[in-house]
Length: 258
Image (cartoon, rainbow, N blue to C red):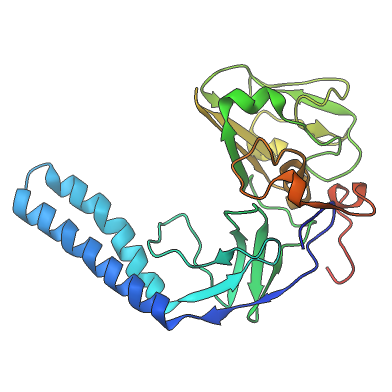
């Protein structure tokens, strides 16, 4: 059950899918065969295309050893069922952390064969909890009032750079003296520095697309639920329930058992 402001309470089981292993083996072998045919048959610059095609082929074949699937504990979508694997996509297994559900956007852990949403208090070494949207919707975003670095009450906001391409939360962004709701919020102890790692958030954009990444999962989840109708997620805000205490999640206070 997917709710705002509270870690998803449900857990699902990881299962081994033999048919998935077979299909990945066939797809991986086919991709590798095409890569070899292109490189050997055409030659010249085609070797470059062949090498690029060989990358997903190799990772898909490697994923044959881990043909695991599980329902997402938040929305029920199938996790781990992709045939073609890319280098930046974790493969579901009995022990994996920070796997994103592409349908509802939450991140999950698989530990001892059980899948559950990651703890709200988890902090990555650099921004990595990611969501994307059309650049035209950037001005419509609602930013949580809690500090994106620690979850404490925010007292000031970061004014993002207006550059149409590049990292909007880096050195050209400026830290204000009050909350305005139009950018990442910070407490008095955070927000300094001039890079996304120090600021615990990265907003990168092109003229067409925007990627927003957070270090603190609670900040990511609060941002995700507050902007579902603008982000590239299938589960919209109308399908998400309200928790009794919505401020608890962004403050980093996990549900019982976290």
